[in-house]
Length: 510
Ligand code: FAD
Image 1: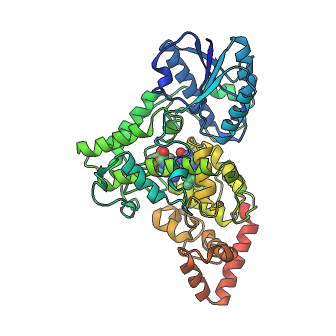
Image 2: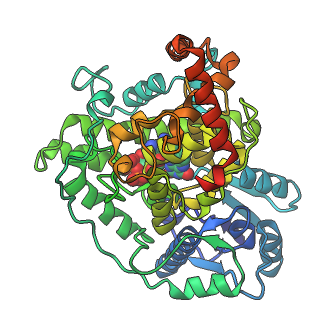
């Protein structure tokens, strides 16, 4: 029986049981499509990274003896649409059965679901064999509960998968070491070397240009550093464990004008396209700690494990529990545009300039840059969450909707009204000044609240709380802010609100 098996661009799991055996009657199909390059404006490194990894994966499958049909973006017979291509292939190769792996994105899940209803051959969807959890596991876990609490989900995951546990208790007696992971970079420091890797991706870049695919950001041999094969992804993981893990915890939230990647693992792309699995990442990190060679502090290990089996799986669960409505949530009713300098980084605000320029250069910013710099500013300036989503979905190498939208619309913009987080992540200049050296090279003054040189974060922060008082003042984690606001005299309040208003009017010039 001729079977067609679809592999999407983020389903490059070489360990999947599908590949245990070769079969001449089974065709694997992979496609580069305008449907995928054009649904949002992507960073050029993201499109190139996906296509390069897909091409390498297809080659590897062929080497193992599997039959692969690979449609390049510029292939004459490429209809640029997933289901149109599938129909064409089913006819051309006399396909008698269709199989696919469950997509992680709602739009592709719907598209394939609807398509399969129209088929007159048998079809079946399989698990991707990547995540710790199934799509519905989080919903089942929180059944009957009013709120989703990440910490309780995380503890459940630790227990269920016996990760850093001693029987029913956490191995050190303490679940969470978050408070120990908040250092800033000292005056003098030297980061360990990253692996240097060069890929010649020029032919892919030329193809995108020739086909008129619109992208953003830069690419050249120096700034493209993302893995395209499983071997490279495993090498990155090894280097992270050997050189960076020891200080991952300490500097997880720190930001610096001379630092792009810091002590972060840079494995989100490899994980999200499934070159490596979360389990092998967790196992490797725990082994490094247990071997003791690198003297890894437990706080670093726990902090890292929480990101992977906690946040990453939690976000996936929220996505499947709440889509498709989630993509429309706008709790505050925000409707402003993103400032135009989000596409260039040309702003006088040092923190935003650094976070955006490095995102355009490397398709990467770390969590706190995404949350407390670009996300914080978009929320304080009341940007439409759909515009914020589109920016994040485009610019980052690891941006796939299930993990992008829950982080952006949920955690960062609080547009879900508190499904992901219990309060909005906003801050004045104080936090940025404390966690980075950005403010020392800024046109604005972190300590000034009003006047020409006042840091915009300061007045926008109070303006945000003032505007959304009805929605926020009953939140037990925020009440204190309103008491501080209420204690300010009327003149100070008016000056702050006028300053914020001025900045909102002149936002493209900031
Ligand atoms: P590290 O800091 O080394 O962390 C290790 C791993 O933990 C990451 O690779 C990632 O797989 C996981 N992780 C950490 N935090 C989260 C989180 N909040 N949610 C899910 N997984 C997490 N992550 C994406 O993978 N894709 C996205 O599109 C994405 N968009 C984001 C948008 C916003 C506004 C914010 C605040 C965060 C977003 N994140 C996203 C989460 C996080 O910022 C990235 O996973 C991380 O920066 C990737 O870099 P790293 O691999 O060096 O991570």
